[in-house]
Each structure stands twice: as structure tokens, then as C-alpha cells.
Length: 296
Image 1 (cartoon, rainbow, N blue to C red):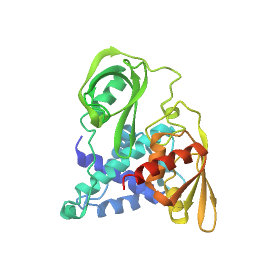
Image 2 (cartoon, rainbow, N blue to C red; image 1 turned 60 degrees about the horizontal axis):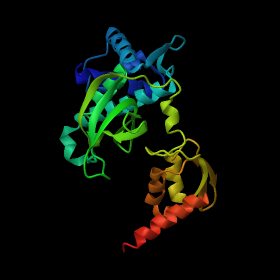
Image 3 (cartoon, helix red, strand yellow; image 1 turned 60 degrees about the vertical axis):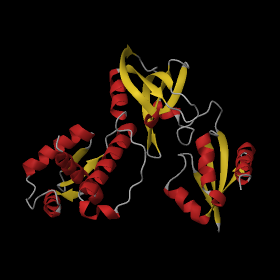
């Protein structure tokens, strides 16, 4: 499908979502002002075709209120479908905006991160077919690559990096692997079935980031400066986050496992975040900070 055609679908969804409710005449007027229209009006037939394509591609329904003849987005997706649709739309919207901004490309600075474009389609295809994958894995902690055979259960993105989580046939347990550290990835003819009681959403339910732990979740209490508290409100560390607001600081409560990613996140904020509880997390942070200070 032509990329310009997908951009039209994304434009329609984005416009309806931003307006909440919009009539066809208003939508057609906005369409004529967009760079996608070539100055031509949006016909009803074209709109209905686009609406059907949007449902087929994204699972999003552009519904019509027969009382007001206004179009709106009907939220009839599951939570997982909604997140995936939102991620796809955000990615495509940004991609379309960047493609339409070549004249100011030198003024748009992007972060250089490892790409998963080569491996992600292969992993997803293996998931759809229920087939194991094999690859060489280049861990940062080992000199030589490790040969891995994996039943891919699900994929997850964290801090712009893609990971696959699945059952490692060599280690006989569920493990996490970064896609950008793979080489010689290929799909085998070996079938697998994901356990019925395995829920991808529950796997990281009590964790921050991509690392997990066999330990039980802990009640975590953090003290954040008033400025840092605003960032935590805008982007919570975890769904369990609760806040107590004070004059010059806030106290945040969580229920999470003590993982490597969580400790790294806390330390990345320096003196703006202080661990109040539990004592073992506080001790771990103190030890890490002392080790870091000894380097200077």
C-alpha cells in the first residue's frame, strides 16, 4: 500500500480525535487545507472508503451520531488492541510529519538508537505462525556470542529498544533478549504453543522496564522535589503510583519488584529523588552511589 494512502488514513483519525466530534462538512473543509488533498475536496464516497480501510487496518471505528451527524472515534477495542493502535498511529503520524518537513530537516534533531527494523518483522512472523526462532546473541557481558533457540511469546519496547520475551530451550526458562544484539536470526520449522496460563501483560505487571525478578513486589516510597514531581505526574513510573503533595516536595507510593531497571531509573534523577522505603532498596542505592563516587 502506498505510504501516502496510509498518511491519509492517519490524518483522518488524528483530525477526528483532536476535534472529538466533527461533521462531514467540517472534516471536508479541514481536508482541503491539508497537504494531502492537493486542493481537492473530500467526497463522501472517498471518505466512506477510507473509513472502511481504517477499520480494517487499525481496528478503529469512525462512528456517526445520527442525532447530530457528527463523526467520532468509537472506543470498542480491548486494552491491548488500543495500545497497539495508538502506538501505530503515533509512529505513522510522526513519520508523516517528518516526511512532509524535508525543507527544515536540518532543524529536526533525532536520537540515534539501534534499529530493530531487520529483526522485528521476523520475530512477529514467528509469533503469528507459532514457530521457534534461532539466532546468535551478542550479550554485553560475554566475549563470544551465544546460540539461542527461543519460543517467542511476545515483544516489548522500552526506551526505544525492542525486546523479545520467550521460552529459552537451552536454559529451560522464560528470558528476555534485545533485538539489536541478534545476528543470523531465522525462523525454524519447529512448532510451539504458548502456555494457556501465560499472560504477557502480567509478566511485567510488577516491574519497571524490561528486567524482572522472582522476588515478591515491595511497597516503595520515594520523595521527589516539586519540580521532579511534575515529571512523575506526566509520566508515572508504574500504574500503582500514588502521590501525596506537600509544599516543597511530593511523596510517591508504588507496589513494585526491586529490579535493575528501577534502580537505574531512580539513580538517573540524582538528588531530585530520594528513596524512603524499603530499607533494602535504600541500601542498594547508597552502595551504588558510593561505588560511583569512588571513581572520582
